Length: 581
Image (cartoon, rainbow, N blue to C red; front, side, top):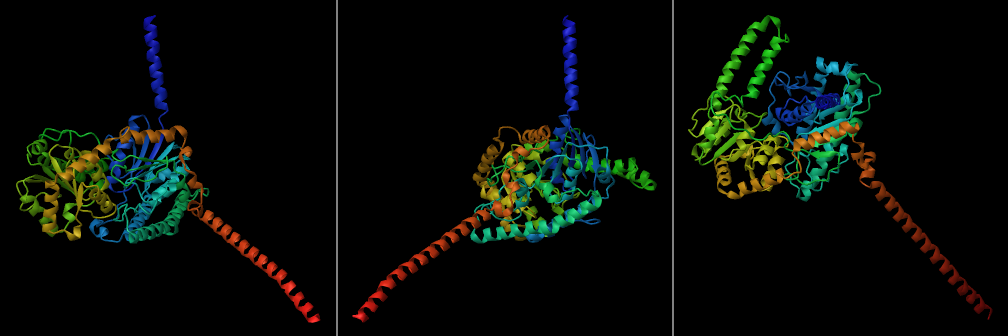
């Protein structure tokens, strides 16, 4: 009898597991932007969704062997056949930057529409999806998949709390009186001139999206999807069920958010691991370098490269993999020992994944090098290249470092950064003060928040001198208030009911369970802009007031005329009587 009970219990568990697996949803994730930082934010979310039994199809230019999903490989660089100059891009005005990146997004959509994998998604009649996850960043053409597959949409925003054009489609108010548009170097305490510019800038970029960007995208979608019932992309954007923002009020300006918008800043950050100790430690190998080489080798092995070159290319890739792997191990050798032995602390310097340190001018790099050579602290510099002339003994360079793990080390004293959101969050997670050198986009506003919060300083690339860089580094190292503020804000950042990745997954699965999230959509989404701004109420009150005033004037005139008419009659009769007498 006991055996039968055990067997029945085992069968019940197996049936429950099978049913649980069947309930796994089919999810399409569209993440085609060729920016690694954008991919970094999303990858952990996708891994966790796959771990929970969901079936994922991921459209992305990034791939690692063993990723638990079907990959639709895309390749649409910012500049076809060339290199995008981020430093020059950062010198443009904020509005010009917006129009340039929207133009890039349009070209990305145009090129990917002819991608074989994307064409299969567009034309397929066998595929079914329960959910679309998509970054809302200038490739809105792919919102059409939500209509094709009749799937609710989860949008994501990598650059903090987003701009007005991210928030308005979700019904979130965006008060321009104290919330600067993304890309503007303003705080929440703006002067009259800054508020005026903020309002005009917001009007300009939203008009550009409505009058230029979306019409081109709509035409492209109609041409390639061939669906006469396809609604405008603006409408599909407004029908999104959830927006995940890479933001948290511990470091950003508090803002009003509807229940369909969830803050998940830091969901990409894993708990820190031990650093590499020696050549035999493979736990933290160069995933970026080796993955790139493995992708090249895989392209040859699967026949996507020219057959006539396959053998030579395969041999070259294999040799490059060995060479790069050996170079990486030399760079990373005894990194844990390097950090542990730094009695005076360590400074980490990285310009992120888009801008390379070698993109900076020789004069600026010479300033950095001269300052580093004077320091008692050790320095780790993410620098591309095999060697650095006049490299001081306290400086180690490498094309890649395990950044998040480095920042979490107890001897880390300062992070010199470009101010990208991923780097800002990892520094905040670890409680490390910042010296920011912003280049483009939201980096200036990110670093201004760090400065205003008391745990960072900002130097603009065009104004860096030996004196200013020396002062900023020494100020951050010698004044304990910066480190204290960084640790205080880190505690606020960690003080949440649950980890941000758990919040993100729970929110996504809630959309799946309910087939959308219409119950979280504010009524503002059903109002016109004039109603949202209460212009109809203002017009009604004004007309009512004018009507009342006009009525009062008419009444007064009537009373006055009546009174004077009555008083005039007796006077005339008196005159007639007097004449008779």
